[in-house]
Image 1: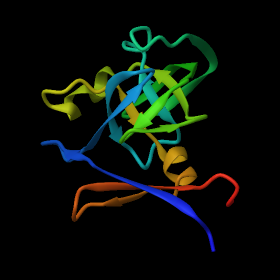
Image 2 (image 1 turned 90 degrees about the horizontal axis):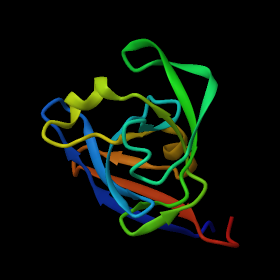
Image 3 (image 1 turned 180 degrees about the vertical axis):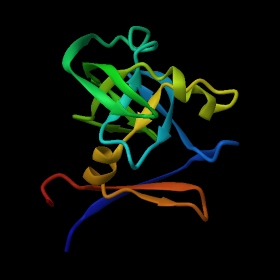
Length: 142
């Protein structure tokens, strides 16, 4: 029998149909789009300094997100928190996300939570209840 901790939190749906959650990065509140099609979790380059994150530019460029190529930064997110639970080793990259700000309506979009996070935690999006459920194996029970 697999023992897991399950965490559920509500997400908001914007006028553009995007699912947004509030999280904390290094103790700062951030708004993230739930993007199951994104190959990586992303933070907007405009906010990483405020979050206390150092960026190292990558030699690779990111493609997609509605434009051709984006200069991408490699970053370390030390503390990523959802619904009061800390998730360690959460990988993000940094990109300019000016073009996705319209998705947030009146809220600033700080980033995207991408498919690697959803796969790692067997996340479920329930559009009937507007809830994200995350499953995490308990220590020693994997």
